[in-house]
Length: 276
Image 1 (cartoon, rainbow, N blue to C red):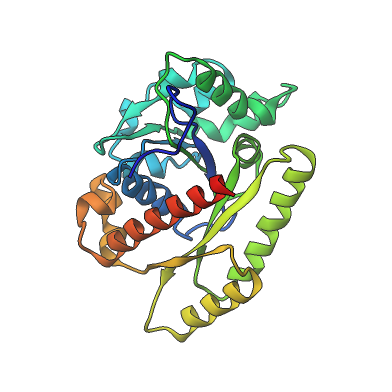
Image 2 (tube, helix red, strand yellow):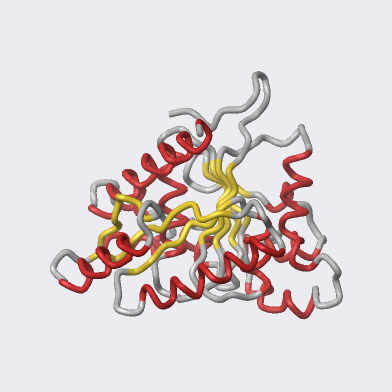
C-alpha cells in the first residue's frame, strides 16, 4: 500500500493526527505506537511526536532516556528544529520525536510567549516547508492524559483527532468532555480540526460491560467509531517493557492483528476522505 497521494513529482502530503483522551490508561500511547508500526508495515511513512512528559511512547519504541538529547521540549521552546529532534526507531519507516520530563515545565517556560499554543504547529510548518526534508504520509502526536497547553498545541497543529476509548463504565462521560474541547479549539483556534475517529480499546469479550459500551458509543457517535476493536491482550501490555511495539514483540497475538486491521481501516478512511 502506498503513501497518501500528492501532486506529481512532490513528496506525499502528511496527514497530521493527534491521539487524545484526557483520561489516562485508555490505550492512547499503545495505539500511537502500534498503529504507527502497523502503518509502516504496510508501506506508509510515519512520524510520531511524543508530547507526553511521561515519555511512554519513546520508551515503548526502545529509545533510552539517556539517548533523548533533543526532544519535543526543545522543539517547543525553539531551542531545536523539528528535523534535529527526529530519530529512527527499530521499525523501518517509523520515526520519533522523543519526549522528556522537561515537558512538565513547558507552561511556565512559554507563559509569556504570544504564540505559546502554536509552537508545535509552527515547528511542523517550518519542517514541511523545507523541501530538503523527507516527507511523511502520517504524523501522529501523542498527547498527555490531560487537557493542558501540550494538548492544545497538538490540537492546533493537527488536522484531526483520533480518540482511543477504553470499554469501561465512564467512557461516554469522558468522551463528551473531550469532544467539547475539540469543538472549542475548532471554533477559536483551528477551524480545520475534525474528529478522525474513535477507536474502542481494551475490549473484553468475556465482559458484558464491554459489549454494552461498544453498543452505546456506536449509537451515540454513528459513523465515527472504527469497525476494528482492540482487544484486551497481555502480549500488547508486555511489549513496552521490552522497548518494542506489540507487532515486533508478538506479531501473531490478537492485539497485533487488531492493530494491523485498524491500520488498513484508517488508510481506507483517509482515501475515501481524499476522494470526497
